[in-house]
Image (cartoon, rainbow over all chains, first blue to last red; front, side, top):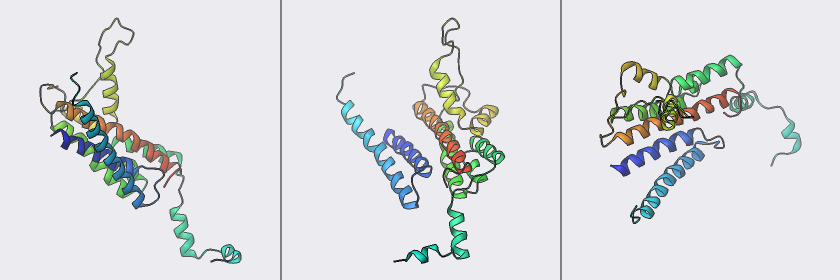
Length: 57
Length: 158
């Protein structure tokens, strides 16, 4: 459930940020920006969860 | 490779039209203002007014969808609440920030309030925090979309 919500959050954010990217000139650049943003959100989220999981507080 | 003389040749009418269509266009102040207001009221409304139909649909479905998803899974509408009348801040800061974020959703927020959706909080619901996050996300992203609509209308981007 939590991962699904995180992925949905990342997808919505990535779509909007890619669409308003002022530097992107072509659709390919927009799609790449969106994929990077989506991957960044998921990757950093998973990394933080792995780091924080063993902490007792 | 083109020679210098060829580069100085006038463009064909088709090329000139294509070039003009690609160049950023500055809209009159009234249209700029209308685009900003429309973009805030309805996510994607400003882009629709400026003829960016694809982006308008994209923003409408993602941002309105995010707000409705939040409402449907026990989200609530925030409004600044008084924390301590004697304190310097007076209002509970977190409710001020969250209500500012949600108000970015424009008519989504106003209509939900008018129709009575999301007025009662159910923090015990397992999806409560997720729901509020999606509603806040929709509002904050719509602020960026409003700025994007203004940039297009003022000729800073296509």
